[in-house]
Structure formats: structure tokens, C-alpha cells
Image (cartoon, rainbow, N blue to C red):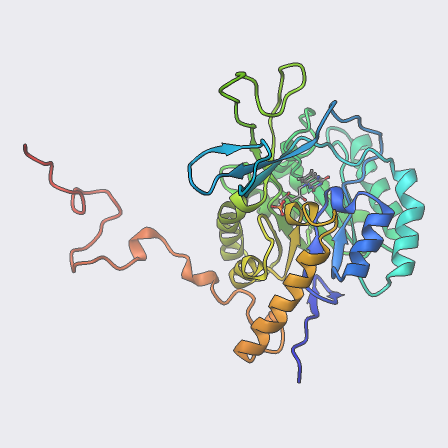
Length: 370
Ligand SMILES: Cc1cc2nc3c(=O)[nH]c(=O)nc-3n(C[C@H](O)[C@H](O)[C@H](O)COP(=O)(O)O)c2cc1C
């Protein structure tokens, strides 16, 4: 029997565990329709808000590349450079809820078997703002959206009660999640920011508020590099820049560390892994650490805007992997390497000498005498 690529996550059946994450690949009806045609199991829409936003002048996303033969890193286009990361300071969708509503309904009718997740965001500083979350949630689920993803993680919102500023506050995370859960009839995923000291704290807030899953990671707070010739940031407007978000290959190991913390702290909960995925072997890390689905942005942006080759590679890779290992479904491997991540002190030492976690002098080299 051929392997079964489908999976069930937060009670929803996905044709495959690969989703486009909330970002430019999912910013329009035509993109999302093309994505489903290409074979993505699900998409998370570009984050929908109630009020229109206006982006900065000029590019909202740039790609940092590394030379093969030197440590040089730059966003300047040049031959034979490898992708290091994406950097963006794009805000949420510049289209309002009214624009999205009929489109969500049409998309769901055209692809009823594929999973459509609406990413939503509002403020959270007052009861009125919390009702905005509820308004967004209700409108999207009425159009047939299968789940809601709460954007508690955009790193470049100025308001202290929006985006990653909410995601840094366990109580706000809990309050927003609970408000949405009060009106939701579909699963609610909380997308958390990686830019906190201990993501387990905020995840606990989300689960206390009733979240059905955590999505992690959004982009990491970061700055573009300064060009040594001009002394300007490689992205700037009138010489000025603000912090934006890093995605792509550079964040794969960083995001895996966050996921490992989360899945160890909540082994029975659901997680959607995001960050630096372009090949099945990248996605496999997330599955083995305990994620039931994964999401992709940067790699898809660089592949005909919605990643037709990326999703082909992911599904082919999954099929090859299951066949080679003799497993039937991805669910058979979810979490099987979760418990291999342990404290330093649990790792074997080269000699019998006991390691005391760095509290005593053993393990350090003798000072050299000249
Ligand atoms: C240009 C751009 C826009 C994004 N917009 C959103 C957004 O509206 N909502 C959201 O939750 N995440 C947003 N993200 C974050 C991505 O969904 C994803 O979490 C992040 O890029 C890490 O995945 P990657 O390494 O595959 O790019 C955006 C990312 C980029 C590059």
C-alpha cells in the first residue's frame, strides 16, 4: 500500500501536513487558489485586521545572501551567493476584513478538501479591541474557514497591545485567546513570537486561554546590515530603519530550539512548526520534535510566489521517506526525537570524571604556563 500523506491536526483532516504560512504567498485570492492547485495541504491567510494599514515606501522584503568563498553577507544581488535569510518589515494585510470576506468564501467553495486558516489580528488594550478579535473570528469562520490563527507575533507593530508585544505578555496572550475561543466554532491556533526569554511561559498563557495549537516561529526581531561603503542600512527609507523580522534558512536551528522547548513542556499538545523550511529534510526536524504540521514562507516567496516546486519537493520527500522507512503516515514519526534533547549534564563525558554543570572547576583546562 502506498504511504498516506494525509494527517489530522487539531481535528482537521489535511491532504498533507504542509501549509503556506501567513505572508505574501497568501495575500490574495488568486495566490491561494494557485497554492491549492499546486498541492499545498493548507494555507494560512496573510493576517487580516479590521483597519487598513499602510506599508513603508519601497521594498518590504529583502533577501540576505552569503558568498560561497568568503564570510561576506549582503542583500546585494550577485552570482553564486546562497540564501541566508529573508528580512521584512511588512505589516499585516493592507486589505480590510470586508475585502477578505467574500474571497474566503469563494476559496473554500473552490477547494473544500483543503484547509483554509484565517490569520487575524487586532489590538488588545480594551474590551472594544477584544471585540474586534471576536468580530474578525466570527466573520472568517462564517465564510467556511477551517481554523483561526491568532497573530500574537508580528515583530514590527508599534502599538504595545498588538503583534509580538501581545505575544511577550503571558496574560494578554491568554486574554486574547480566551476572547476568541468564546465565539469560535473552529480550532484556534496561537502564533507566538520567538523573541522572548522563555516561550513556554507565553505558550502556557495560550493554552490556559483555550488554544488548540501553537504555531512557532514568526520571524525573529532583527536589523538589516550596514553597508560599509555608504554607512546606510541595506534597507532604509531616508536613511532610517526600524526592526523587522528574520526568516528563511538562518532561523531553522533557532526555531527548532523553540519547538523543542514547547513540545517537551507540552508533550500532549499540538504544534505547527515554522521557520527556514524549504526541503522535506528540514520539515522532518519539526515532525520528529513533535509538530503535526509545518508552514513555509521564505522558500515559497522565492519560488513563483506560492512555491509550486517547494510543495512538490515536500510531498515527494515525505512519500520517499515513508516508503524507505516502511511507515504509513507522518503521524508515526511525530515526536519520536523529542526526548533526545536533554540538559548538558546528561550528555556523556569523555572520561569517568563527573560533570557538575560548570559549578566546580573540573572540566576546565589548566592555565597554560609559558
Ligand atoms: C514578507 C513577510 C510577511 C509576513 N507577514 C506575516 C503576517 O502577516 N502574519 C504572520 O503571522 N506572519 C507573517 N510573516 C511570517 C511568516 O509567516 C513566517 O512565520 C516566517 O517568515 C518564518 O518562516 P520562513 O522561515 O519559512 O520564512 C511574514 C513573513 C514575511 C517574510
